[in-house]
Length: 60
Length: 249
Length: 221
Image 1: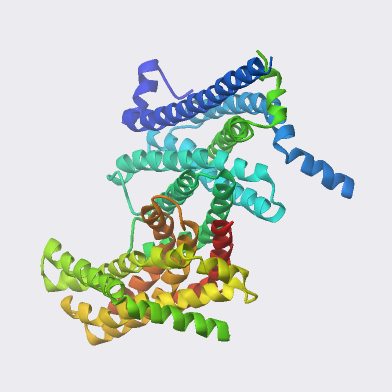
Image 2 (image 1 turned 30 degrees about the vertical axis):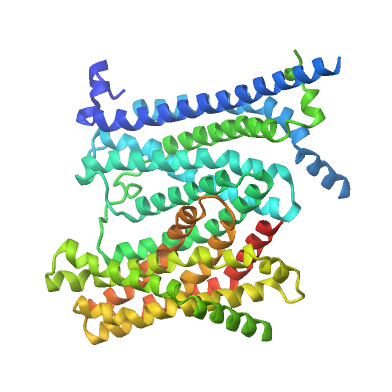
């Protein structure tokens, strides 16, 4: 085990800003990408469902 | 032989690939999460402190895998492009455009983490190191692909134009890398290299490999998810889309 | 081969009728190169050091200016479609157009570069190397540029897009071209750089017309 305490873990031996800046931004950007892709998919699906429902009503 | 060929092309049809991708992506996402957990555990708790670079070297556990991924995704894009041009399959263009944003993102992460690694180690946020410079140019290539495909309205034409760009790019990537390296030696740039860290211990290598696997699984999962959205956007008038269970009221 | 010569002659004739376009690119080259001493300062040793890079970057930008006109006019009046339908291979005609583009936009830069090099106090020997590097490099710019021009044909925002696509691919030419002059000034000999530039030119001369043709066919669909 490398770390004596939690604060030591977050300090990263003085490199905290750089290490957490790297890991944090990586996690954040991947998360943002996931959210955006999910939104793109669900938006498309919702629009298509509405379109199809309208079509069905027109046919009936 | 012909039987096998037919089967392959069956998966190349968006109608069969859409549900397949829907079943596959959660598995890749789960694998990615698991690998990320192991990778992070290795990078923070197993890998010992580097006696020269202190704790700052832990950045390479994402920097190096992200660089690998950005290059690998570009190659995969070019592979899809080649398949698309040879067999004229619709799916390959969709896969290329589903991969491009993720590849660009990894190129960005690689540059970002490179800068954050460089500041404490080299004393500067940006150093014209051969690897970093090539990575920057790779990001430009990704942006060129994305901008071109976004500017063309007809998706089929956009796919084909994108395929040519990515093939031209993949031929150029080694040339660019080589020329930048050549330029770097001429100008006596920084000779410190991240992967030439003094103690390339096996734990470090394992950490990087597992993180690379995590990024790899993430990329597959997100590309499959994105390609599902692209398929729906492009095939909106196909009957099979109307018959999908998620399209019923 | 006759078709190749015919295309080159035709394009040269067309360019001769629209001289202003050729001269605009040349003036641009001159102005950009002259701006650098004004921005950086006129210290001779500094100017000599930055000259190869500045002249090469200015040449890249000047060559870019005329790229989007390489196919645009022929695309608008339907000539390009006739070319695609003609029995002569389109790649041959594209090579002819690329060659004509180099004659009208690349070669003038090569000839003008030594004059601009004098502004930067380059020695006659360096001027010679600069000319050779541009002579090998500018056809490369036209060849790679042709792919970009064909891809952005008829695409909205084509001009800016073209630079985004093409400039990263120009980097090796820039590195070896400017590097040749720098290496020679440092006493390392320019041979290695120039032969690599020549190798790139050979590679591009083989592949680029083919890729540009494929891109043109997409635009014509």
